[in-house]
Length: 245
Image (tube, rainbow, N blue to C red):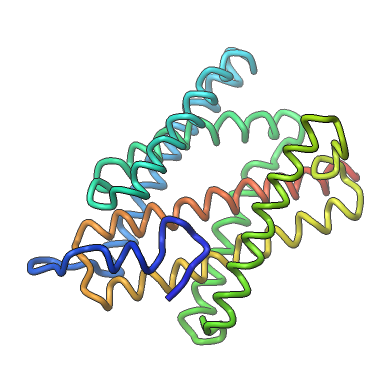
């Protein structure tokens, strides 16, 4: 079992002790995912309100706090899965602060883009879940390796782009609305979406393996990480389409 999501991988599930009481279930993981989403939506709504009531400058501190706090608690959760019942909700709360501010900035320039991106994100997740559960998409070893390789390539692409940006080389490629830029974003959105399928598979595998009950929170956290990435990529893609209008 493999996944490109660093939060959900075979090492994590194998590293947990056998559960002698309640064990991880699919329904439990779904419930925990819903809780994390509500946490993120609550703080995102707060950042959104601050942005439009007090101005863009007023939300900068909240966004920085959200980004740093989210990163810290994501790392803590990744290395300490048994702490996830506490750290995963905190991660979601911090992440919401950042997402609310980012979404508001896009919304100011492109009215309606936030709700469209949210709808597309959850619509994509539901469609892929149905395709996975119906067996249309089968998570084979080749499928896993392909998605992992593509995700790794995207990560390296972002690193190279960031380094080149420091030297003002090739700036604007990922932020322009050129056909090449849109094409790259479409590929990235597709790979991010396929990571959801791997997440579904690993959560299901964890439940079948009798993982401890707290792994429901950890599985929900891993799924949340992918959803955040997918949403941000869709938000950027939608902004490129609207820039061409």
